Length: 119
Image (tube, rainbow, N blue to C red; front, side, top):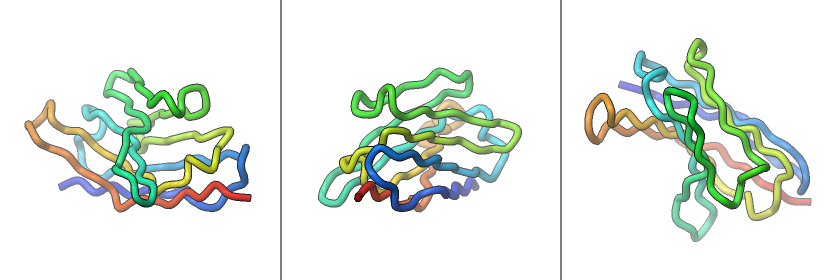
């Protein structure tokens, strides 16, 4: 069983920065694709960024150039550095572990951390 625990959310002014962290339990972190997703009130959950076990990254167009996803396999942790934050970035941010290469359908989610961008 995998548990994902996000941290680092909070209130920040427009133009500011935050760094989210997601710590994973278990032994499959290093061979899994990790991702950050977000859900704003009234909206569906959407992809923010993913990083494969080999370090390849993918970003939503809305965050390219502002957000950076990274991982530390020694610490079983994935990060999301968020810069130049905008009010439209306000959402609950969720960490995801995609273990489908290990077992089809293997998919884990954290409980989320709230990011509020407001002056």
